Image 1 (cartoon, rainbow, N blue to C red):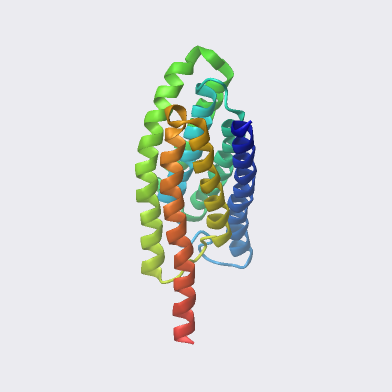
Image 2: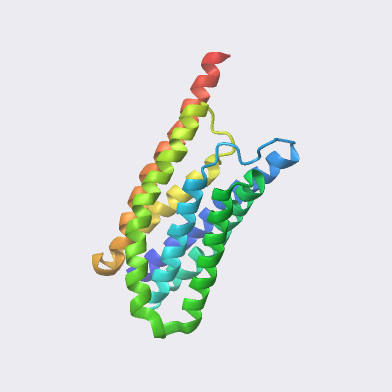
Length: 221
């Protein structure tokens, strides 16, 4: 019963976080309509690529464990697709080798993840081991990616195209993920607990930077 409640709660907050990611896409589109030369200004390719990998890894992990974790699989599949959309917008804006490589890799991984889901139990053990290892790697990359995003904001002294709403919604998702991981138990829930804890800390740091930016603007007025 508690597992179902925690899973449903986590799914609810993941759905809310999807709106947060969608708001980031909308902010890029709005800045393009307003005539900004670089609609994705200040956005870290590093950070969004790692975010995509995090969603993708849990999408794969969710269908690789027993029982099949619907709460983990489907919301994160949608989140990965939205993150893929942001990568596409960054690629459209900057047209560099790095953005092109990141987008191609993300598309390839989405096809690979979908293929793994389609083949089902034939590659369950392999998928679980690969996704667990990837989650540990992604956690390290996530910390590095958000540190890069934080550095870009500090150097620019502005948040630019970064969406506060996205950070708020993803923080709520991270907190519910920590609760869900504890209910799942450490044997299967530790990857989710590890990544969600690191993600929550970085979101709090970025949210604080919005307050810092406001203080700078007030001091300059």
